[in-house]
Image (cartoon, rainbow, N blue to C red; front, side, top):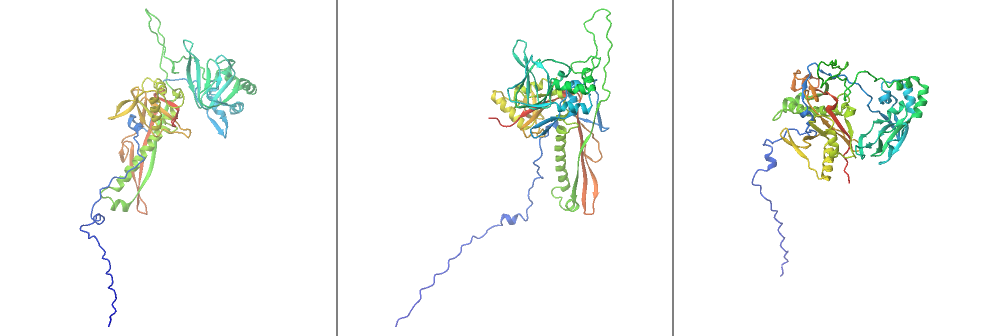
Length: 473
């Protein structure tokens, strides 16, 4: 008798599990105090301009700059409006021409502005040639022009460079003459040109315009001036015996410029629950205030560079602005910039402009020098430190400016203005004032920074304009 048997079932596989022998790090963190940083902020920069300017206490909130009397000679710049490819001069801006300084008849200036003709020049083209008939007034809307003349030994030399807003040929309105320099386009240039015949046609209709030009403008004066346009002090030197000495006095400006302290403000809001409960290990209100102060200081430096009322870029004298030789900043450009004043304490430039200058030095085999600034080695040119300032703008055309300054009251330079001893002051000229708690239990603090800057004499600030910062092949 046979017995049917079934095959034995295969036992299930045994799952091997690793036995945890200690507490996991994820669980341990529930009982641990983490080590944490203060809130970080990417927008904090070195702020060298704020650190290097000497700050003058201004208790009255206003700083008056008294200067010797000087006579304006009509060396300003004109402003244009652009519609597509068409460029037009603002009529009132024609009063910046030397012979039209002070002329304010809008109808006559409008008629004159309508007679300007737009002209385009390519790099290397000659606009006017020395010895040629001077019969046009030129306004530079965009681009760069070199004024070329003959040197002492008959060689060609660069007499100067003109850029956006500059003019030449303004004296053509008074009569015919010849050009004593050659004007050549360095870059693509857009000009507005006024033929003298067009001016004469307008002058026949407006006698006040003709009389103003024939009278030499409104700047005629009897008193002599020194090379800086200041009323001269008559002196006698090298005389012997009982010579009659000249009479002299130092005349002052009748309406000196006054700088009022500007302000940057914000209202810092902190919920009372946050301020009460979440202050360990860091005080929430203090951290909020610290970051707010950093942002205010960044804005303060931006205003010192760009504010139209007191910013360095807008308030530098026109005579203290020069153009680059070619495009990027070269050693020759910085030498020209330094030569414009008796002392230069600092050069400020956008980091990209500093890099562009470094590339030009590399091409010539030149090496940056270094100087010690606040214990740190900084790049320098001719012993003058070059400090980065990201607040100097870079335009859409990839151009920027380089600013050279002399600082200090005793050195007739640039100074920062502030007022110390403010109520609830937490830093010099910066205070934080409690504003109350609203019905939503939100605490408000008014945080204010007061500041301004003053240029004591025109040559305290010089600017190298239209500095190309784009990479060059």
